[in-house]
Amino acid sequence: MKKLTILSGAGISAESGIKTFRDGDGLWENHNVTDVASPEGWRKDRALVLEFYNQRRRQLHEVQPNDAHKRLADLEKYFEVQIITQNIDDLHERAGSTHILHIHGELFKSCSCNDKSLIYEQKDDINIGDKAEDGAQLRPFIVWFGEDVPLYQTAREIVKESDILLVIGTSLQVYPAAGLIHDIKDDCLLIVINPNETGFGYGQRAVVMKETATQGMKLLFDKLVNLA
Image (cartoon, one colour):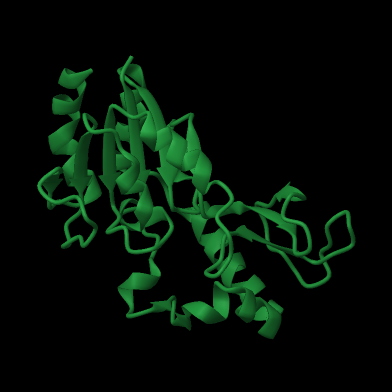
């Protein structure tokens, strides 16, 4: 089976009703991103950060995977599929995809603020005073701006072995994830689905579809299957 790697971003989840911070000129649900998604914000106001992600977690319980998520899951019938997602939601999982690497963390998990290897399932709110087994405050299991991306090297190795790389719902503006595009093989087919102008350096290499994730997958699905 050919190896199909999907690199997904906020655009695919937006069609399920999940907002992205790029919708509001650097604001994420009316918050400055650095206040709620950085180590500095955590040190400044833990209660604010926890409540921000508690609200995101509650919202995630209320939304559903869309047709793009479902079509990506269906591709597992035809390809060896690996999804690398910048999204912290579980919509790929709920749609039926089975191989997903969350390089920016997962909203339904928490971890010790002193040791990110102490990880817990977290479907409900995290409150001040909720502690990990090491006695430290629990925090969202999210890679914040300014933190290392521990799964990045794993993602690079996956991309290097891909026969097809499908970039969907992301303009690849956030590093290091944006650098993954440069790890593909010379004969790897690169397909980009994104309605907006994208600035990453694929040159003439990519097949570009200026569509939303759902519309793009509707148009692309059968063509991809024919390549299997």
